[in-house]
Image (tube, rainbow, N blue to C red; front, top):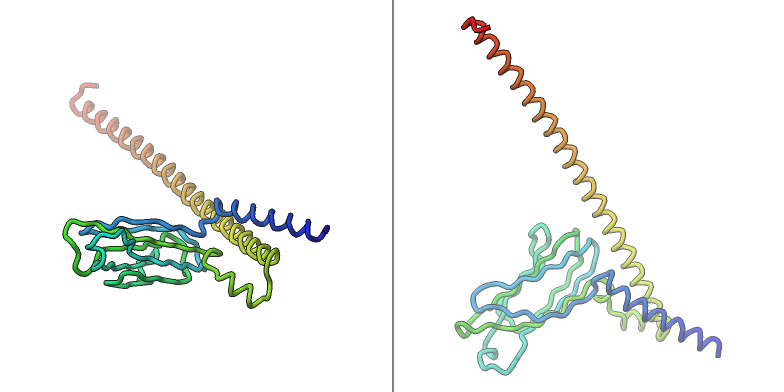
Length: 219
């Protein structure tokens, strides 16, 4: 009985922490996007390096006739503009990659092929990051664990993700503080230089006026 009660408490704590960790670490996002008939719709996500990203996208069939012949095209790029995924004229697709640098990853979608003029298109995008992209069923089968042990393993992954995210935020804050301090230093030196130039110009003007008035014998 005590072991069962302890297991239930651990399961409850793990569930609460897993739900709470979603506010600190963006792990999954499912959205619907309305794509115009002529144009591109993009979504972006700021992701740190060495993070697994999985995504599925598909046309949402709302029983309009023009959707049965519609296709979409997609492109995913890294913060430095490298192509990570490119697919054209499909009704559904997916992409998966591990981030190599931190920054904003951009996914763009547009309507491809023949499509009814003036009619938009709605697609579903299921975007998973980090621990949400991990196949926990395969992990459970491989490690031969279930129940509380599996929830604790998920909790361990969530805690590690939170820790990594906090370190990433700390490093970003340090970089921004360094840039701010450098900018403030440059502004201070620019102000000092501007003041020095004003003083030099004023002295030269006084010197010139003095000699001018002396030549004119006004003083």
